[in-house]
Image (cartoon, rainbow, N blue to C red):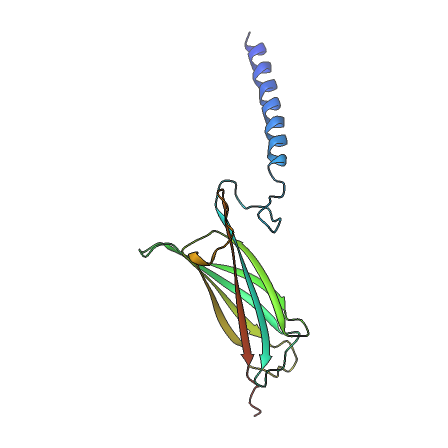
Length: 168
């Protein structure tokens, strides 16, 4: 009798493991939040944040090939202590020949979202000083959100003027 119970339990465990594996794989498909990205976790709200930028020199000429490093994201909920999250992004894009760059992020929709970016010259030796900018999004910036978990998208434009390094 004990032998039969063990076989029954073992068989049931294998069947459940196989079924859960199949269901897990079908739950990892692409969603339709607009960008086709896979959601990090089922049942959590998400929003898309887009930063459009242009990097120029002091005379307004576009600078191509500049490195734009998104180093940190800060999200704030409410006003109390412990309602702020700051995490590392470590994401890099380069400007096109017209000085433009575009970067999109899929994040949790908070009351405020700040993306910290650093713009660096990639030339050796570098001609321009590095600069940094903080791009802020408010909850009211989100547009086209649905009734479900997708809360909408926000877009900000940033213009950065890099100063030439002083010759020593």
